[in-house]
Amino acid sequence: MQRSKVFMIAVLRLQALPGVGAKTARKIISHYGSAQAFFESPRNNSMVLSVKESKTPPDYLHAWYLKLATEEYDFIIANKIQTFYFEDSNYPYFLSLAPDAPVLLFGKGHLNTGAKKIIAIVGTRKMTGMGKDFCAQFIEEIRPLDPVIVSGFAKGIDITIQRAAAEQGLQTIGCLAHGFKRIYPALHRPYIKEVMEQGGFYTEFFSGMHALPGHFVSRNRIIAGLSQATLVVESAKKGGSLHTAQLANSYDRAVFAVPGRSTDFFSEGCNDLIKHLKAQMLTHSRDLINSMNWQDQPGIVLNMDLVSSTNDSVKDKTAHFTPEESTLYQCLFSKGKMHVDHLARLLEWEIKVLYPCLMTLELKGGVRHLPGQFYEAI
Image 1 (cartoon, rainbow, N blue to C red):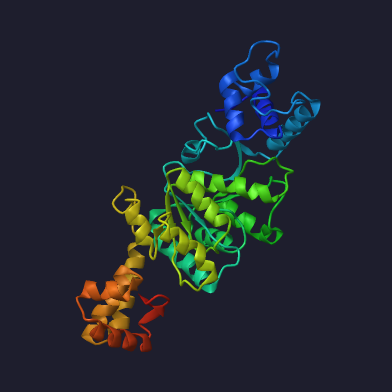
Image 2 (spheres, one colour):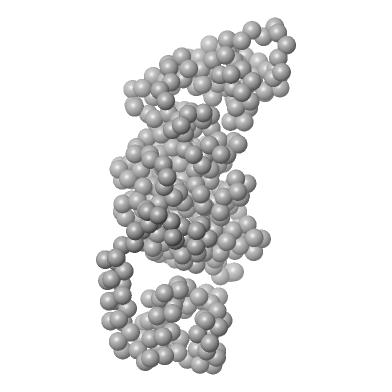
């Protein structure tokens, strides 16, 4: 829906007011009917929602806010910025369900969430090698679903998962904690084109706004709100990723976390989410696919070339294995990472039989021993 200049400037003006968050702005619009009516309404009548009650600054009619809104509107037009008003049909559907979603969202790029499956993937800025490997593997596995990958375009897990998604031809959306005249971190400037070609960016901040600490907290609700599921790959005991997971839980969205050793600093946050039942444990993409009930939905087309080549690879690798080793390898390959106890129950093998076979397979390069007595096929 194309909104008029007068309408847009009024909304921008409301959004520019200090102390007026998304919830307050929605209350104002609901009471007055529109942002324009709020600014034009006489103040000497009896009002259900007073200026004081709405926490609007006493100088809300100051010319400065009108000037700021007008300049922002000119920037939007000049730079072909996409705008998404919360009552319009083009507003991202899942974000529209969040009670604190922005009244006005700004976008750049090829933003088409439509009927797509949308997954937010977040994690620490100080990513480990295991985190990097997981990102590449997860995107490869999830690719047949053709999902939209949402993250924060930050260092570490965020930029790694977004670049991996773009390389695989998946739409990826970066949610920014600043306006479109800025880029944070600056070293990610070379990746803007890469993301724009496969997706784009959302922000609720005016073009000149810097990436201030509080903005990242606000940005996290957009990441969580846009998505049907949120996955935390790596996180320390405290971090923005955990806040995103908390928000996703508050929106009744599915939350997943990748477990790690109890001694791993950047697994503490994920382990806590799982331990306190705030996230489902994810060791393989199928955990998310099955939990979301996406495995049998129309529109999912598996990459048969990849499946065929993978099967050939398995045959080549198992050619030099004993029958027992081949059975064990194929079980791990098909099921993904598994705990040794679960593996023993599944195969109906005694531990004293399983362990020697695992050790031999590890020496032959067939499996990898992971922390916590987990094993996976290589």
